[in-house]
Image (cartoon, rainbow, N blue to C red; front, top):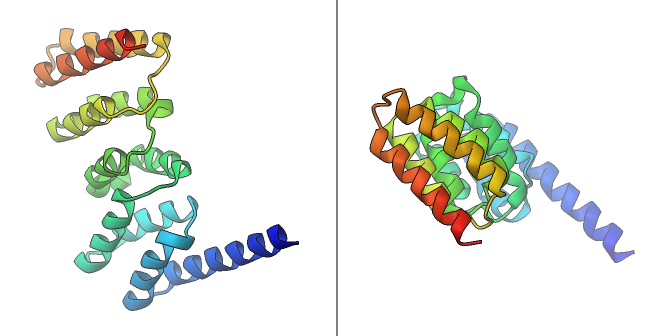
Length: 180
């Protein structure tokens, strides 16, 4: 019975976080972001990213960024990566890239998506991607690394303006394969 009670309690707390995030009141939203540290779920991540995109309040955005940089739930990786694919969220992409490595989330299942997104972005995003690769917790399969190296080498051959950074990515990926 305790498990059922615990599940109901967790669902109730998650609902409270959702309501708070949807509130139009700044103090209530900030309180909900803080509550999400303990009682939040991966489903709250898109809501918080949407809040960042649609408001210019530094205090609120700062609280969301702090939470994203300190995430402990692996399930949060997927909504962050999906948000990186959304061009309308471009203004907050850098914070999402930083959250992936600062929170130590395992990005290895999304590595191909991340590299492809980074290659279409600027120097800073490429640097964030390199940092994510350097901090991978799980080494990707050799086939993934080979495919990524091909993609990265093609970018270098296309006379990419960030050639040196891309070559560093290739080197780190190759080192990962050797470390297996």
